[in-house]
Length: 143
Image 1 (cartoon, helix red, strand yellow):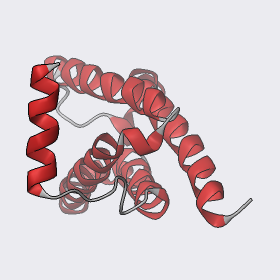
Image 2 (cartoon, rainbow, N blue to C red):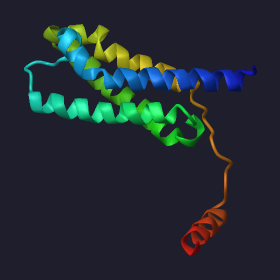
Image 3 (cartoon, rainbow, N blue to C red):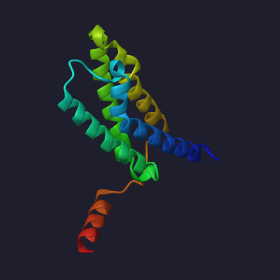
Image 4 (cartoon, one colour):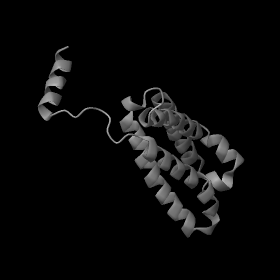
């Protein structure tokens, strides 16, 4: 198996694992609150985060079937996880009561960032010109 095919296979596995982790946010918050729950607890905020990450998890698992068709979702997950991890990591370093997050949710986000950044191809679809893009859009509208 060549490197591209192997990386695609590893990306598919990573997408399922990351998606599964996102789906497990609620149980992780219950089992390991020092690594996954921020204080003071705000149940409305926690429900929102659980809903957003569960949805993203489902779509990442779905994207694992054909990652090349879902590159924008994968790169969104990369960049949003990087930003989220930097913000949470900074807050955990500043507030000693939140340091457990450095080995919990912050570490999980940075692991996802490293895996997705390493495995996701930088190019996906053949480049088209603006004229080709507009012709394609017109054809789609007419059909």
